Length: 286
Image (cartoon, rainbow, N blue to C red; front, top):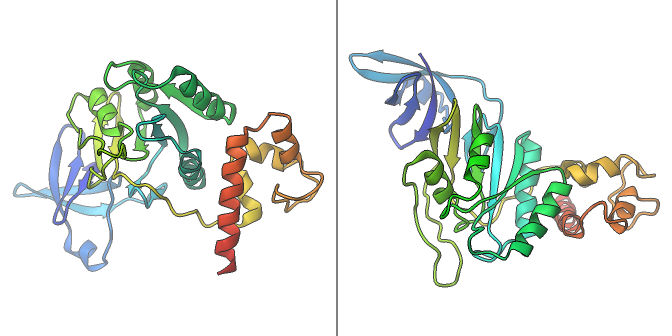
């Protein structure tokens, strides 16, 4: 039997088979090899005397480390505007990781019912012009959920974003299961609430993952002159630069800087790029 791991606990895994979800232990030889398994892994399962056992872990297409999910097709990056405050640098850091891992990124602006429509539209404009599909939602009222659900069919989707933006509420609204973990603290910051990765079946052969809240992602291991190519909106102009290893910061004849000046690349995205470039160059020193 072939199944997909939905969750990994200390001694067993939840695995979705074709017609049911079962608890599995790992075959001893896999434990001996110290083979780690992750939510999203495709596995071969056997059953003897009612005990389901993971016999083999199939080769992965990809593996996100933070959050730890395997075989991901796309990531829904959820943000609010003010509750908690939106950060372009955080958003672009996560999208950079998705690009690096070959995961399609989708931007979801949640809490439409309480946020400023102008500010929502500004975020959508920045990311739609950068080439990302955007959806505006309200987990409370149901606004935009039909469009969001249509994106999830036949894919493994990670929901990511700062704690408190409403990832768990969105997933709960979509699958009809309460996965709400916590509310905002008095300071307006989301608590680190969801403690492990859990994948839920949804729609037509789709799976969604609610992930532990996090506020920082390590920069992907990339050479500084290659960083711009992980920004879709910057990469298409980087190919036109006069210098082949252009960093798009101080160089002359830079097509990227020209595109920023002409409004073809948003200033917010370019500033995120510069901040991440400085970080990549600092890492390279060590």
